[in-house]
Every structure is written in C-alpha cells, then in structure tokens.
Amino acid sequence: MRNSLLADHDSGYKLLFSHADMVKDLLQGFVHEEWVSQLDFASLEKVNGSYVTDDLRDRADDVIWRVRWGDEWLYIYLLLEFQSTVDWLMAVRMTTYVMLLYQDLAKSGRIKSGEQLPPVLPVALYNGKPIWTAAQDVGDLIVSVPGGLDRYRPRMRYLLIDEMRYGDAELDFSRNLVATLFRLEKSRTPEDIRDSVRQLIEWLKAPEQLSLRRAFTVMLGRVLLPRRVPGQKVPELNDLQEVDAMLAETVQEWTKQWEARGRFEGRQEGRQEGRQEEAASMLLKQMRRKFCSTPDWVTEKVRSADLELLGAWSENVLFANSVDEVFIDRH
Image (cartoon, rainbow, N blue to C red; front, side):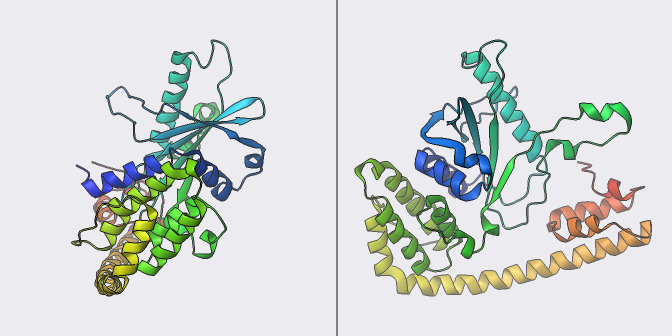
C-alpha cells in the first residue's frame, strides 16, 4: 500500500500537469528535439486518461494531452507514478499503456477504420535518488536472436525525465514552470522554496491562471512542506501569498530543523552508501573469480544497483553459468 504522502505527491503532479502551461513548459524546456518548435501549443487539449488493463488496474493517475503538429495530432502520454526504486520493466509497462491508448482511440471513433495511428510521445517522470538503470526501449529487454527472428522483436522507446539528475544551472532558465517545480523538489532550505514561490507569484498573476496557482499551493501545502518538516503541522494554505508569508514567519525555526535533519540524513546516507559500495565490490569480486573477467557494462550495472538487488545477484552467482544469468530475476 502506497503511503498517503506518496499518493498526494502523485495527485499533486496530476493536478499540475492538467494545465496546458505545464505541458508546454515541459516540452519546450526538457525535450530538446527540433520537432518541438513545430508544435501549435495553442491547440493543446487534454484527453481522457483512464485506461483499464485486462487485470483491471486503472491508469487514472496518468495524464494524456494532444497537440497539433502540422495537420496531425501528437499525443503526449505522461506517466505520473513516483517511486523510490527503479522499475526495470518500465519499457514494457509504457508499451502496454500506449497500446491501450491506441485501442481506446479506435474504440471511441477518434481514429477511423483504416486510418494511420497518430504519433505518441511517452514520458516517464522520475524523482528517485537511485540512478535510473532500466531500459528505455522495450526491445532492449528482449533476448536478441540470430537470423530473421530478430525482425519481430518489438521496439518502442519512452522519454525519461529524471528530475534529480538536473543540476541547479540546468534548472535556472527564465519563466519555466516545470523547472521551478523541479527546483522546489530539490530545495535545500526554506529560502530556496521562498525564491521559487516568489517567482510563481510573479508569473501566475493573470486571472485565468488562478487554477494553476492553486495547484502549486496544494502541492506545497500537502506534499513538499510536510516532507521537509515532518512532525510539524502545516496549516491549510489557499494561495501562494500565504505560503510566502508562512515561510517568512517560520524560516529561522525551520532552517534549524532542516539543517539538523540534513546532518542526520547525511550520516544515514553515508552509511547506506558505504554498505552498498561494499556489497557491490564483493559481488564484482565473486563474478571475476567465477567468470575470470567481466565486461565494463557489468561494473556500471553493479555499482548503480541498490542493496536489495545486490543481495539477489549475489545469490544468483552461485548458480549462474554465465554473466547474464547473474541478473535474471528468479522470484
């Protein structure tokens, strides 16, 4: 069961990315491809995003938009599901969701029989600490075989936007709401949050932006601030001005708490990293003894894995007949 703060986090993102300005800034600021400049952002239109797979899991948390690209529509599928670990089957899931989208477009009559299907940009937003190591193309998860059979291997790639891997300089460009959201996620002090909140107050002045301003307020009050000051009661906030005023009153007290928590988490993280590094070194040593040598990609994969994976792979070494068999999921 996902905890309430994590569920609020997903809901907060869904609320934010239900606004066209957020989708526009996501594409313009974080998709560095030539075709983005050809999109008609005035045509952005939200599409029903509730799809039910055969096992009845609802994808209602995802957000789907479409935008004119010349005479055609481009669909943007935003997977909004934040987790602390890397999902190695993300490419399979993404392929499934996009196929469900195509199926729904046909069933609803948006695509007529015999017409070509529209292009889809699948985007996965990730904000976990571990480096994302999962394949971004479903074809890379499937064993490559010699001969003509390989032509039937499916290919579909998704775009990964890894919030935590962006540096401060990369997020410091003018008037981009998504970059400001990522800065809020990465904020280290109450003053960092105040700087971003003041920017949002300045940018979201127009009456038609009231709903988006409210969405940022909800995200701050229910997710970002409670996560920064656990145990502190954050009052119900109705506007970004109230967020700024509250931070002004509590900045000194909260800064001390953040600093103390940061020192504690730093010590805990240091211990965790030490255990992880030791386990990775031990696994690599075991593999080199058994297989004489290992390719460079193995070292990179092992060094970036978490303790749970390293433990499973260490057990696999005992029975593996090849390097590849070490990484097979036996559960």
